[in-house]
Image 1 (cartoon, rainbow, N blue to C red):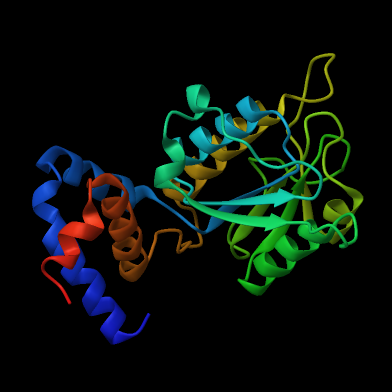
Image 2: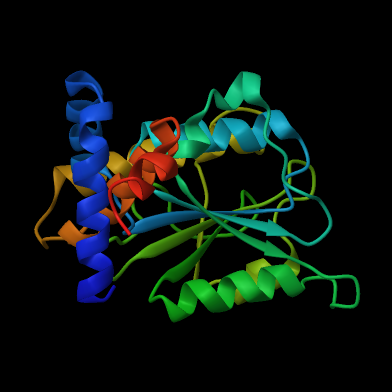
Length: 235
């Protein structure tokens, strides 16, 4: 962000601050202090709205800011009764396959973007040998977790394109968990591990510039007629 853009952002935050209650403002600061982009989530072709919406709630609840939506075959839909408005607090990235693209084009685009941003790609699958939420190395760099469809799991493109694999250990007769449950279990454990720290410090927290940028977007979404209010005070 340029100096001019940053100054504009700060001016808009100042203008809109009186329209945010002190309680809501303090809550925003607390949530931002626990937010991370060190671990991010990507979901591939989720077709049941309640599962996709439950994953969004888990991301918000456990402090993960970014969600990457891969749409090769299925368009991602939100179930308002499950999601309960949590998407307004998250940063969503969508990758859509166009009509003439190859079948996994959206997956390829997402993996390319994540890897370009410095993420290690970690595919979750009960059928692949790999780390668990307790043993996945976090000090090796930022992690992007891939979750697949409810019935078929991740595509071969996602599995072969991953740098590592992750599974949740089972001791019962079932081989896998519902995708939203798998995501919740994994995110809860990884979030705790990040915040607990370890022998190697991990830079999991947002930068100050990221915090201000996210705060700015939250305020714009939460203040009614925000843009009209700003336009009356800024050229």
